[in-house]
Image (cartoon, rainbow, N blue to C red; front, side):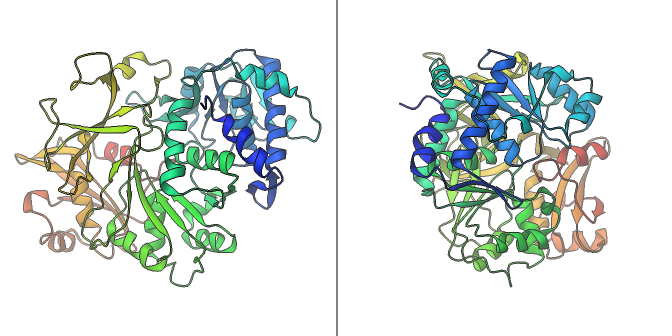
Length: 508
């Protein structure tokens, strides 16, 4: 029985391929043997500062080999890593650090100045450079024996998500939930260690969890894609084509930009075998473009909020879809059940919309130091009145179609009442993306003016009359936007997704 995710490495890549490249970062490579040594050095340094286990240890580093060593070192120390975005605004970063209240923060000499300006004590800082040296200064038997005290429901990482109060919530994910999802992914997606992953997802995003564990368990190679390339699709495609990368796990926004610029037409990407995507809706038109240019690849749509470890449903794209047809989020992952609850807290029938709720070992422990918010999201299963059983309410609306596939309608809080009609803003966005000139869009609602507002990204500004005229065959009149904002580039949050909160706030 596997208790913690470190067993993936100890019983996986370290035994099978210790000299194979584990991480490739800007031309520098770390073997699995080096990764183990540096990580265990890091664990020894953490233990010199604190003997506690099960606590969050923040990591303030850019996505890099250093970041990966730090995360692994924290796990070897018996604690849980909490990767923080080095680009976070100061007040947001301070809110996360105050909530975590950690004794040790791992950073680098280069990044430490930012923390010091926030008032972080220099005594709390541990520089990762101290661990990444040739000298071995850990005691392996002692270190591994310490891990025997851990259980599978102890936290392994904390991932922050936006909070309504302005301070992000730290979602506590445990070893059991991670193993539950990752083992399913290995089996269902056929991950076998031959993967050379083009890792673009920030380490603060949960897609990184699957890449990290696939590397440890299967001996796959994690190639760190330079973060700045996400903003330059041409350079990003050139980078992927120049490396022996055969596995992608990205957010759709980046893939949509590549499709809109027709960048796959001349790219030599025939080595790509698997393309996974998560985090937001992938417009079918742009997905079809990717499938046409990478016919050899398996495409899989994964869905799940951060509170469900990486994903709770999946859909392997195994049939053709028309450009205006919505893609399912599919079926529950193994050992997970999806409950779609209607307004009466009963299971919805086929075609009946309701809130997507999740039960199973994949759900998170809750929000760190936030019992009130935890109690709102993680609740007793209303369908089971016989014994305590928590489910997670995603806040997403969806239904099951005639095939039994789960279809995502959008956020419950993206559902509006306008002119007496209940409207899904996601449906408006889906229609807008059928217009060839528009690359990305976001629909919001101005409650004070009672108008649907459309933000859209395109090369040139289009007149409101033109957009409404072209949307008229696709949407009923009451769903047509009445206010329009053209943008050369939509704002993005750290995960690469469109920053809906920022756009929504701008129309209040």
